Amino acid sequence: MDDSKFKKISQVLWVILFANLFVATAKIILGSVIKSASVTADGFHSLADSSSNIIGLIGIGIASKPIDEDHPYGHRKFETLTSLFIVGMLLYIGVKIILGSVSKLMSPEIPVVSGLTLLIMLITLGINIFVSTFEYKKGKELNSMILISDSMHTRSDIYISLGVITTLIALKFGAPPIIDPVASLIVSFFILHAAYRIYKDASEILVDRAAIDERIITDIVMSHERVFGVHKIRSRGSMDIIHIDMHVLADPELSLREAHDLAHDIEVHLQKEIDSKIDVLVHLEPFEERD
Image (cartoon, rainbow, N blue to C red):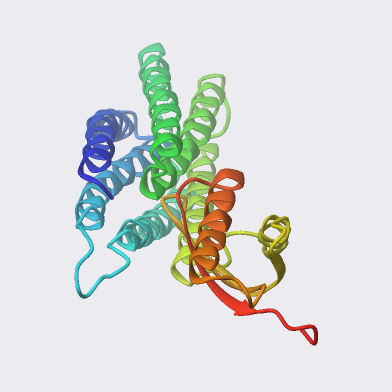
C-alpha cells in the first residue's frame, strides 16, 4: 500500500471515528437517562464502530509498510487480518447485549420516551447513514477491505437504529415495556450477522480462496493465437491486488524474446479484461502434439 493511499484511508477513518464517538456517546447517555435497554444497546454498537476505527488505523499502518525480506508480497494482509479483530469485538458486544437483554426481560423497566428522545435518535440515524455511505464509497474507490468491512458494520447500525426508533414510538403509544429488551435482542442478532459477513470475506482472503473464476482466465488466455493450452491456473488476493499464476502451452520454436512478449501480452490482456491491479506469473511450456 503506497503512502498516498494510506493517508487517504487514514483520513477517512479519522472522520468516521469522531462521527461514531459522537453517536455512541449520545445514544449511551440517552439510553441511561430514559432507562432504555434498546437505546443503550444501540449505543454500545456504535461504540464498537469507534473501536473498530481505531483498530483499522493500526491495521493499515502496518499494511502500508513496504516489501521487505520477510514479507516479499508486502504487508497488505495485515489490513484483512485487522477485520478479524473487528469480528471479535462485534461478537463480544453482541453477547454482552444478549445477556443484558435477558436480564431486562426478567425485570423490565418502562423507558421515558419524549419528543427530544426521538429527535436525538433521528439525528444519530442521519449521521449513521452519512458515515456508512461515505465510508463504503471510499472503500470501493481506494480498494480498502477495512473501509468496506467497517461500512458494513455501520450499515447494520442504520437498521438497528430504525428498529430502536420504532420501538420507542411503540412505547410512547402504550406498547408493553417488554418490547424494549426484545428490541435489544434483535439488535444483538444484527451485530452477530455483521460479524459473520466480515469474517466470511476476510477469511476467504486469508486462506487464499480463488479470487477469479478459472474459466474466465482460460477464455482470455486461449484467445491468443500462439497459445495452445493453459492449465494449473491459480488465483488469490483481495481487491487491493490479485495474484494469478498458470502454465501456458506455446510453440516450442518461439525465441526467448517471443516467449517473453507472449507472457507480457497475456498479463496485459488479463489486466485489461479483469482488473489493472492483477499480478500475473506465466510459466511457458513447449506444446507437443501429444499434449
